[in-house]
Image (cartoon, rainbow, N blue to C red; front, side, top):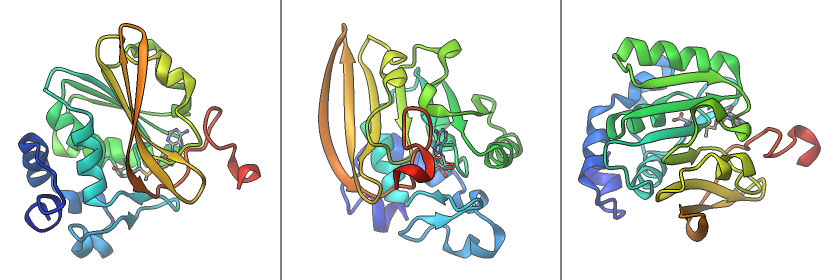
Length: 209
Ligand code: SAM
C-alpha cells in the first residue's frame, strides 16, 4: 500500500508513511472484507459509513504537519483507523463520532491495540469538544458544506491547522485552514468524496439532500 499507492502519489512525510506501515488497517474492517483492507479504495464499515481510502488518510494526515507534541481533534471516528494513525504521530487524540455503535466499536479496537492516547465520544462533532479546546490540529473526515464555526473557535491561535473536505453533498475539496495570531488563511487542495457530516453545523440530515 505504501510503496504502490502512497509514495507514487507524492506522500513524502516519512513519519506518515511509517505510521501507515505500522497500523494494521485490516483490523479496522469486518472480517469478510479484510482481504481488501490494503486496496486502493474506501471500504464499507457498518451503519452505511466508510473507512477512507488509504491515500486520502495519508494526504489529510500529511497536511496536518504533525511533529509529535500536538493535541488533535478528529470529527468522524468511523472505524477508528484515521484516529490510530493520528495517535502514532501526535501527543493526544480526541475523536467524536455521531453514531454511538461506531464509537463503541472503535473504542474497543483502540484498547485491544494498546492505544492509551485516544479519547472517543459519541457526539455531534460539529460542536467540537469545548472542554478540551484549544486543539493544535483538527481533522474532519466527513464532507461538510463549510468548516463548522465552533471548530474554528476551538482551534489554537498558535499555528493551528484544520483539514476538512468542504463542498456539496456529492463532491468536496480538501481545505486547509490555518490560524495564526487571530488571522485565518485558507488553501484548497485535493478533490474528494466523503459521506456527509451531519449535525448542527454540518448537513441537517435528509432535509438537505
Ligand atoms: N475517520 C474514519 C475512519 O478512519 O474510518 C472515516 C470516517 S467516515 C468517512 C465519516 C464518519 O463521520 C462516519 O462514521 C459518520 O458517522 C461520521 N459523522 C458524520 N457526521 C458527524 C458528526 N456531526 N459528528 C461526528 N461524526 C460524524
